[in-house]
Length: 57
Image 1 (cartoon, rainbow, N blue to C red):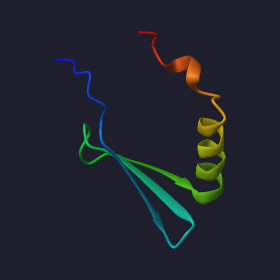
Image 2 (cartoon, one colour):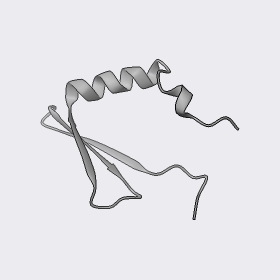
Image 3 (cartoon, rainbow, N blue to C red):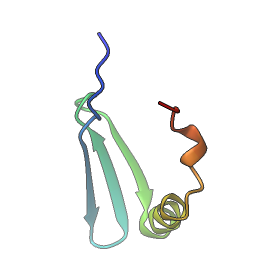
Image 4 (tube, one colour):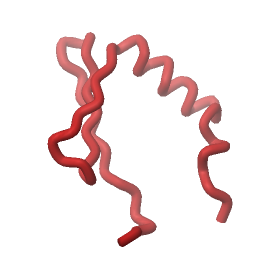
């Protein structure tokens, strides 16, 4: 079953060094990175570096 609704994502930062990303669609699965890499990723998203991955309507 597919849905047009986005998956809920929770991002938490522990002790300002470790960032954990949890997707509601995959309970029990966590992606972990460090704060510097997360900040660089967010800057790339804001700059539009990943816009080509979005499907055209």
